[in-house]
Image 1 (cartoon, rainbow, N blue to C red):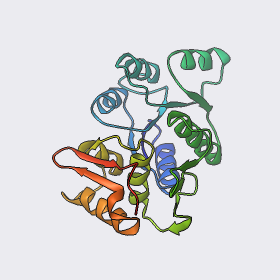
Image 2 (cartoon, rainbow, N blue to C red; image 1 turned 180 degrees about the vertical axis):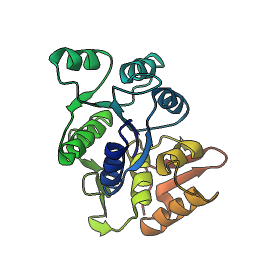
Image 3 (tube, rainbow, N blue to C red; image 1 turned 90 degrees about the vertical axis):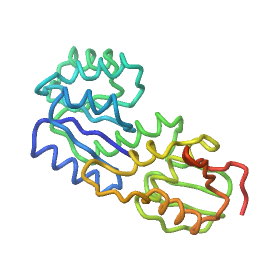
Image 4 (cartoon, rainbow, N blue to C red; image 1 turned 90 degrees about the horizontal axis):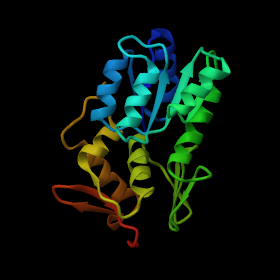
Length: 222
């Protein structure tokens, strides 16, 4: 899962980055509203953590621009503005949730998990495809009821493919999902992850569409 954190407080930004990266998320961060709008228009994120008091362009304007562009990306507002009217304005502008600073990092993590489940159309953290089962909270995978050890990026890739079996995801989409701006990416990195998943699970699970991308074959069997 790739998240974008838009927060101008450097110490809070780094604290959240450290806490969420330890949970296996790919996390990019910005401190400026105008930069955030550009990133949201050109890159793929699964969830946005948005401060309201930003330089360049305020958080509500960023949110309104995102929704005006037709993007349904879940947005969790993080702000010190605790008045009921502020919360109502944020939610009416298109936010999915609202968390008041200061907050416990455990609550932030729980709200992120809930929003990601909701955006994927699931009521719980389990993704069950019969012979393949994923638990998003624990980042664990079971193949034919046997546990399978995956790296963080292998899990993220499998999860993205598995939540829409049969859908073809482009290489660009998957690479943006797996790698943040700070990551050094080899040209064949995505292919390596796909190879490892096929080896750890079974070869026919992931289908390659040459020149396009990859799909999880919902009818494949080992």
